[in-house]
Length: 241
Image (cartoon, rainbow, N blue to C red; front, side, top):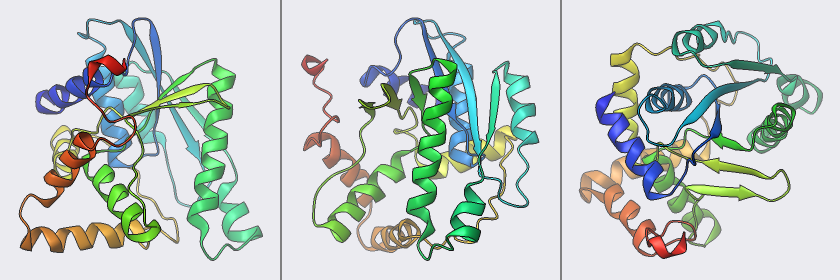
């Protein structure tokens, strides 16, 4: 956890993600990335010089076989309030509409439900679990599939909902996420979604894995390029703040 916390703290400070008095909601899907984000921020709040609180929100898509009770238990251990919101996303996407490409609609419905819950709770900052590898994969997917150079930002302000998204895990590589979750014994909720593991992102992950065998440290070079280019919102120049 000390290694993870050092990376998370540096990322939070580099991009001014947390202000004094913030209440940061963590979007907890039950996957390894969001669970580690929750645990890291809960630990960080104990010693970070800017005082902030943490709450956890899970959008339960009502997919058969999913059980979030381990997440509720983790939140109790971390002394983090937990909000479980049930939305019939599985039924809408797979039963009613029988979407052939369900990921886009599912993500849209999740975002809407999460935004509604944030507004209900009066919160305006949400931490998402995107990590180092996610940023690299997103940039390469954008280049290969859309013909443009882009990536999500470390900090994103959404005008419509007046919510700020932060991504404090951006300096943490996926292999470190897996290792930390395993060593810390953090609960991960298995995802029985029929489309799980068959996305373009999984294809890109496999492609980058193969390319790194021929071009060592390729992902490190791509991540560095994202910051040096810099893509919008990625500059480390303090003057922008």
